[in-house]
Length: 388
Ligand code: PLP
Ligand code: COI
Image (cartoon, rainbow, N blue to C red; front, side):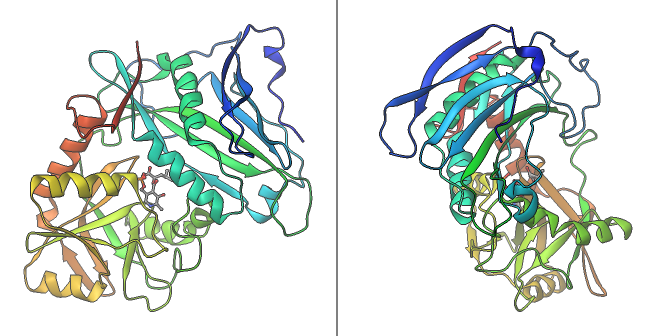
C-alpha cells in the first residue's frame, strides 16, 4: 500500500523540481519530478539552548519515494512530517527488509548550511541495499532531493554550538506478502531530527567491556550493511552493559571471539606505541565515514595508521607492556568517543588515566572543524547547500 501524506496538506501549495533519473533503466532521463508540499501547520521549533538529546524531535517535512518492480523508483515527494500507512503484512515487519543511513547537516557560524560527504552515505546505502536485495537508489538524486528537504527545513538546524540536524534516510520493503522473498515494493524515506551537542560537558572517556557471549555480526552475514537487524540483535548485550555500569560493549568476531570488530555502533581505534590501529574491513564491520575520514586526516598529519586484524590478546599485552596509549570509537553521532576503561574478563585496563588522549583530541577537533565549516578540509568533504 502506498504511504499517504497526512490529510492536512491536501490544499497546500505545491511546486515541482525535475531531478529524478530512472534508476531502473539507468538512463539519465528525467522521468519524475520531486513534488514539494509544504505544511500548513508548522510546529513550534525547540528554543535556542533547549536540551534536544538525540533523535526524538522531528522537523516539519519528510521525503518519500516509492518503488514498484517494473516501474522503478517513482513519486518522489516532500510532504509534511507525519505517519505513513502500511499493510501489516509489509515485508519490513516480518523479515526485516530494511536499510538506513545516518548523516548530519551543519550550520556554520557565517550562516552556510553544510553536509559532510553525503555521497559516501548514499553509496553505502546502495551497498546495504544490495545485501538486502533492495533496489539501488540514484545517488545524485538522493543528494539533490536531500538538499531540497534540508533547505526547506533549514530553520530547524540548531544554532547551538556543536548541535546539528541529524538526517535519517531509510528504505523498507513494503509488499504485503508473507512469502520469504524480496519485496516488489519499497518506500524510501528521509527524516530530519535536530540533535543537541553529543557532549554537553566536554568529551568524557567512557567505560567499555569486551563482550564474550553475544556477537554482532559474522563474515558472510550483514555486518558491513546498515540494516536494522544488526541493531536489534545488539540490544541485549547493550542493555546488559548498561545494567553493569558500562557505556557499551566491544564486539569480538563471531567465529573465534578473538579479533576486535566494533564498539557498540561505532568503529574502534587503538593507539599502541604511537601507531594508530583499527580493524580491517573484513565484511563484518561497517565501513564508517567517520572512520574513513579520521584515517585520512591522521595519515595526512603524519601518523602511522594501520588497518589490520587486531586480537584482544595483543591489546591486553600492549597494556601490560605500558604501550596502550589511547582507545576511541568513531561515528557520525558522537564523532569521537574516547574509551577510559576496557574490561576483558577479570582484567581491567585503565586507558590514559581516564583522560582523552592527544590523537583522539586531534581527530575530534580536526574533523568537527571541517564539519562545522571552521576549517576547509579536503576537497569535496564539506558540501555547501545554501545559506540561512
Ligand atoms: N558502526 C556501526 C555499526 C554504526 O551504526 C555506525 C554509525 O553509523 C558506525 C560504525 C559509524 O559509521 P559512520 O562513521 O559512517 O557514522
Ligand atoms: C552513529 O551515528 O555514530 C551511530 O552509531 C548511528 C546510530 C544512531 C545507529
